[in-house]
Length: 378
View 1 (cartoon, rainbow, N blue to C red):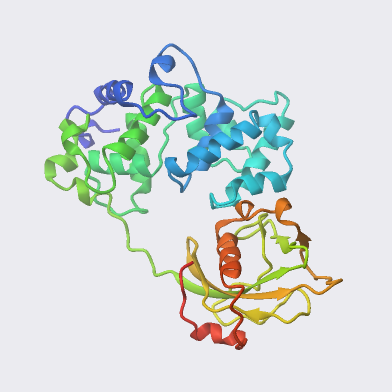
View 2: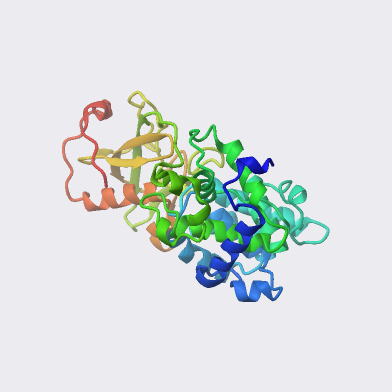
């Protein structure tokens, strides 16, 4: 790139400054080879890099660490994960959100296990051809696990680069320019450590709010710091208001304590996860769709949950399943076979709402009252 577009001193020296800082301040993460061992030539298992990077998408390190360690304990190799039953993987993922990631993990693991080498390829073009692996993840595996000089750009890296170069164009429009600038900084030497250093810098120093510019190793060459606008960058285009949707959830229990649960269709939100039967989630009040005939009773209050693009409000209806109940979808499962912890967060909310309120059974108003019912976070 044209050197006139770089801050003074940014170039080869920047990677050295950042790697020196990383060697002193790298976070201790369970999927990471520490910098002293990395400098000595040790490379991480690409399976561990892939697993951690998929889990970290849209999720924090604090939230991911426990899941990562449990996954690795159950499925220590990509072949182990490839052989795992879908339901067990989805149950282990429960609560982490963005469930398409878990489905894609299984697809990717099975593709790797079925390949001629039964191992991850080491080049970006081959990695991105695997199911569920996009540009970011392919670059991360190639750089961190195989030492390829690929540019890894996540939200932390976008923030660091936007401030370093004082890019005031709003995201997402500025994304292409930020990736180009990040690529201009990626070194041939220790590209994996450089990628992790950029992410660590964004997560711990060049933070979203109140960046610690006085202790930043790149502070002397940061244009945004020089201009006094670091905290204002990157600029993000205003997000549209989230839509509102609504639905009905049906919680049925047999006399032996078994609950009616179904595996949701693989495509769509919460795809492939276990949960209570629901209606569709629509803008207008939904038509009732109970899974079997029974005395369904509406509980007071509602369950409120937010997805990426909309807020959802659910009315919860409960019923005691009569002997011989034959639901048209789902099956009855004893609690040991489907503990609440194996359910995604929304369905845990439904479960908790149902059994916190089960002793209170009011007269059942029409489900059309959903449009008039005040939403309550649960």
